[in-house]
Length: 52
Image (cartoon, rainbow, N blue to C red; front, side):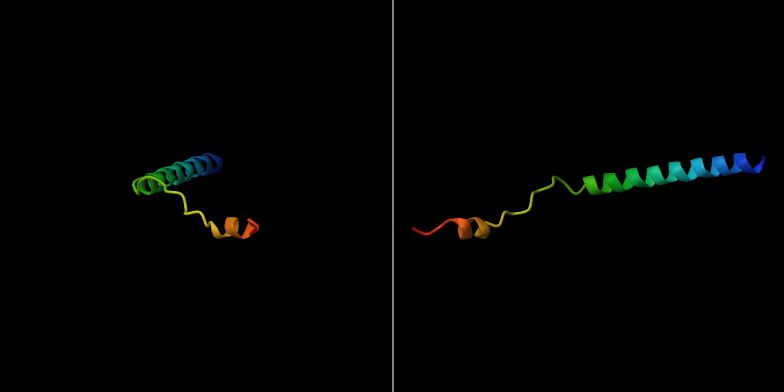
């Protein structure tokens, strides 16, 4: 096998390995459950309302 073909096969194998690792990480993060938004800080809203 010449050098250019070896580099091509090696690059493809690395790309496939990275994609599999990425999919595994996404699956692990997805198992944590539904994403809940952060609580809203209402103190900023209260400070902008003028007291009359």
